[in-house]
Image (cartoon, rainbow, N blue to C red; front, top):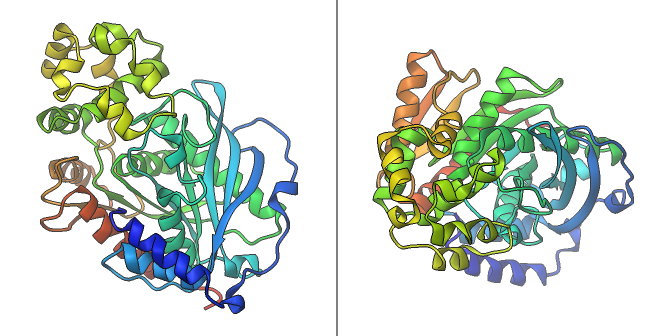
Length: 407
């Protein structure tokens, strides 16, 4: 969602040097001095400040980055939260961004709690909690700048986490998101800040899949004191077997398919060489260790993803015959269920990364099951263009559903 980032950063730098002392954040306790104990899911390990910007800076940033306007009323303090989660019965360290609006630092209740689930990024330095990274900064500007506490999990294996990658992996995704909500509530309590139990969830691309997974998880097993009000998935991959993976092959997205294979092999303790061609099986786990950029990974992969797989495994994938890869895809789909809170599906007709049919298929199946689900076509837009249009509109929709204390 960030093709205008360089312009945005110039605006940010200019505004940061202006005389804007009146927009300084209220004083609050030093988060790095907080001490926490416990290793249960949602327990906090540590908190640190990673940045902060006033309302004028956030406004300038969003004006440069987004074509649709959303009102900005607050500055935001950016905190990195390290916390415990769990997958497969084992404790996992995770991290995420918590952006707190100035109003909340001053003691006023936030408008709500918003969660942003980011898109595909195998590089830990490009995680939301990384200082200044666009995957955290723009959602923080849009949502914390609008009065919400913003939460953005890095996902397992990214940010400060050294866990195995868990790309398009429903249980790990749901755990990372759920436990960040619990951890953030503890952080707010420790800092003596108000916290809202009204939760609004949105995400883009991988985060679109994650949005559906997180809503499904929270509605099946609610967090006490947390009420999911609404969700919005942008360009999400939902029907992995029937639509998402065939589309990735069609449009030659080797990185997406390699990332799924590396994650499912690691999460399910499967021999990656039984599905991936020998030449690539040797290097794939190392490429997705969180320390390689998208460009570096892409350069090491074949241009045609069919060359990534062993011939017999490729035939099984195309015929949807069982192997650990196809079984993993089926286990991690996100479209055969009925949302209770309203879920909006945003898609663009010219998206060549994720098929528009993914959202349409989800809508058709879920509506038949009685789901509270709505299609939101964004016209002839590509993958990133869809997000640029959708995210500010989602903020405005969340505003229409939320109270507005302190304004």
